[in-house]
Image (cartoon, rainbow, N blue to C red; front, side, top):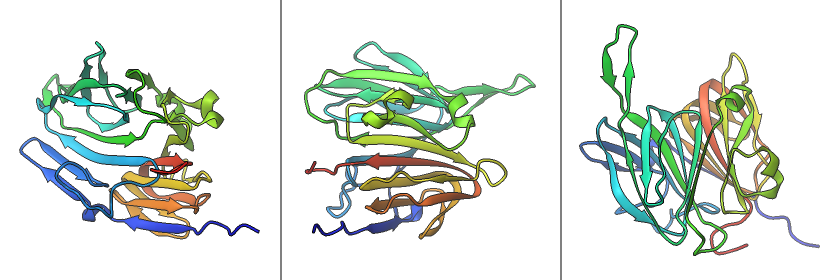
Length: 259
């Protein structure tokens, strides 16, 4: 008789994240990133990067290269202008799912060119706040690609919305596809006054990130903005809103270095 896998829950508080702060960027890293390296904190499942970034108006990341990575960007506030070496150009904003497959190599820039107009016609520049996440593709050397889709209506319906996935089970209800057949990203917008709870998927590896607000996770307790939970063989738990919250959930059925 096979031994059941050991379940494990690892809570990481938002205030403990590694940070990059320069004049125009406030970036908080859930995993090792750039000059911040911790050999005990490099990934969970297939997720290698979960960066929580705020970029000031008129600033951003100049053109730089990526390869062999599936990169999903989720904007919380403001807007982010994307341009890449494949000729794609567009604005990413809240409620828009976006994926870039780096594959054999792609160069891109991400800039905050956002602005908003008040009823009195005053123009105000606005920081952009977004989460960028990287997962490993099934294989290296694929053709680079880009995809985006607005999903505001789906998010308004409540529950878990599958934003990006390579898992066959979500093929008919996924906003955008990623080249990782073991991974899916879900978003839940929860409120004590409306859709207040959602159940986590059953999966060997889950990464739950509280992008904003606060929730209670069954068996764990309260989680606030910036907190994350890494679950191993411990899915199926219920998330309940303690205050209005936006939660990003990676469901993964493999881990780095294993099938």
